[in-house]
Image (cartoon, rainbow, N blue to C red; front, side, top):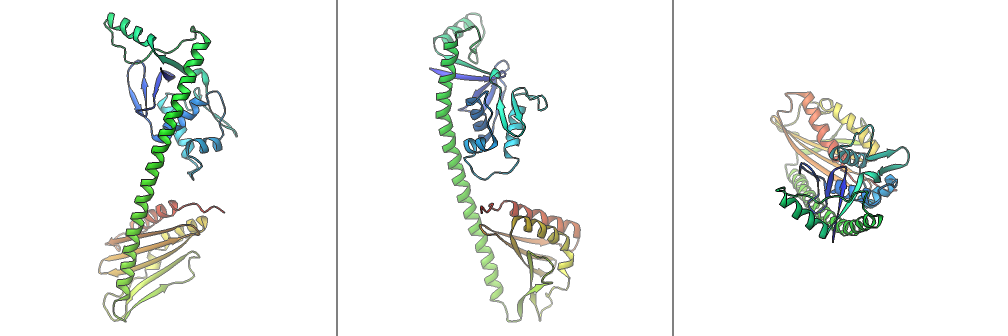
Length: 314
């Protein structure tokens, strides 16, 4: 016995992770967390779920952005053709949470009735693509049975989906660890290379104390024409000042190492907090040509690294 759930003319097909329109057959794929969120809402149709409950049931208390849940709710409303203002199907309850209205959830059972419907449709020369839904004319026991069967099946699918998400998360973190290890080796290699240069080469801090959470260091060639003549601190001061404010908010510190070779600046950043550490290395060609683009590049790439750092829990 297989049970189906239809939400506002859209069949929830959990195995394929999509919504299928009953009349047109149009298929709309959902993201894995969007799918799990919809399953949780249907399982609790007619009940208000708080943000904390949804975070526990869908994201398993992992740290997520403030907009992750609202964005997922918005995506589900678009997929279900729900009006974001009227919110007929999925409603936002101010200061409480979200609710999926039970009246929009219909359940059906695939058993002998489906075979009979399919045979009748074939006799009429019509191909039946999707199961008929249980109507209000059928007995309450049939409706209850269909809902209970769907609840059981969706629980099994939820376990499978959770395992899939956990496996994907493990693969992601393995990849991240590998990428960070590779980047760390590059940084270490760069530092080892610089330490093996001539004794005339030295690492000098530029304008100490200008930024509270940033230290800027230049690799200088004292007796060589490659010694930087530009005042880089002034050139990239707009981006560093903005990043310093962001670092204060994240309770993090940053060290910047740069070396100028002809028209290229080797730019390496190390960002640290109480619970995380990030590195960024760039070779910026023709960095003198456009100061605005240089600052935009430095801010954009560094901001991404800072925002991806783990949130330290007190």
